[in-house]
Length: 267
Image (cartoon, rainbow, N blue to C red; front, side):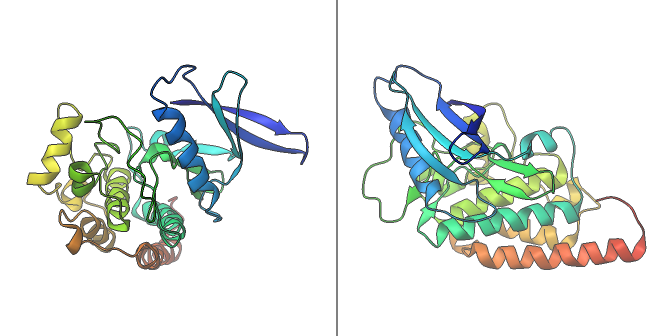
């Protein structure tokens, strides 16, 4: 949807990132409006685990751009491409993302596209949530900026109720967090199939394979949190991102203490 450039802010003498919409022509206005709404939502959230938005504008040809923090790091999608992370590292990454979601949710903002490609891990290992292009605000009465029949979200991580109804809620964001953590911990997607529709439909009829069947070394408490987040019924799923962040922080601290007491192996 967009190209991201590194740039120098001459006024404040700092490095920034500029995200520019790729399409010069957007006859329906959908991409432009979604880009604008996402940037405005993200700009409201001030949190160390959220990429900050500094400015929004348009090029002479009408393409919108947004100026953001420049984060030195790597997308989580690249970090877990073909590999699985340790329980300690997954729990620590989960803490940061859950805290970012808690900061958004308290403002009535729901991300609706939590996935590894939308998380940057900086050089200190801190996760930063970004790209609120599908964000929905609790009080927003405008219809979704989309095309009829278009799935809002990403098939591998989307909550069942969001896939079916386009529902925006903290529980739907936390389902996506659970899918992300499942992928990071096991190296496998919770649901797979032939195409986005097949993948999406599976979550209505099946539960994902048990984490510990896929990754036998996975911490049982972390696995339990992930499966709680992946409950098909949102009523049975956690709703409070802050509570999930605390639970993951406890798990990460225990695993870190166990590792440092036992040996000097890396995360």
